[in-house]
Amino acid sequence: MPVTTNIDALINSLEAKLNDATKQFIALEVASALLGPIKVRIHNDGLAGDGSEIGTYSNAYLKERQRKYNRTADSKVILSLTRQMENDFSVQAVGNNSYGLGYNNSENYKKAVWNDNRFGHIVYALTKEEEQIATEIAKDALINAITK
Image (cartoon, rainbow, N blue to C red; front, side):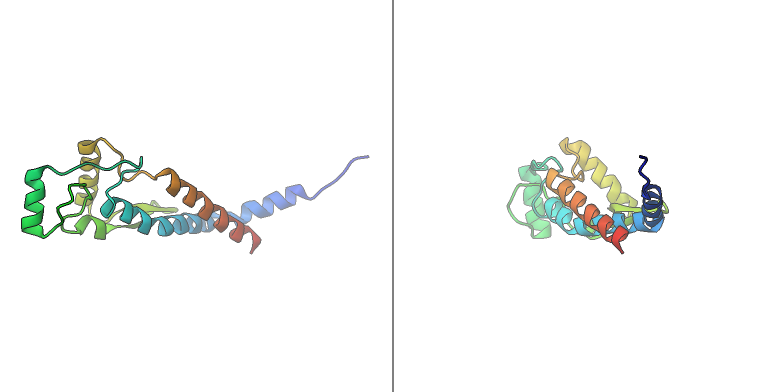
């Protein structure tokens, strides 16, 4: 005896609910939630995407940071001197249909790439924990989108 279902209609309904606006909303939710923790990790804690320290300042540079910018004696690189980079790091539209994290000022982007190369880390990559958070937020947003 053949069994009939409405699975095709259900799938079509789900696909319709996952339109571009929903995809944009999910990407915006993820980017917005991760902005703060990533800023703290990089610009306060001095940690790269792999969880290791970004690097250490040379003694000469550390003294200059202290003297000229009233910064601490901690030699851990935190990618923060004038706070320009960390203040510019924000949620950004990526094309017309998604969101991510990045810079408004192209010079700050260039500094970020330079620091990746300089210290041998991908500083702005997501940590394993941040990836898990992003997955959970995306899952929750997706469930909310298809159940409304």
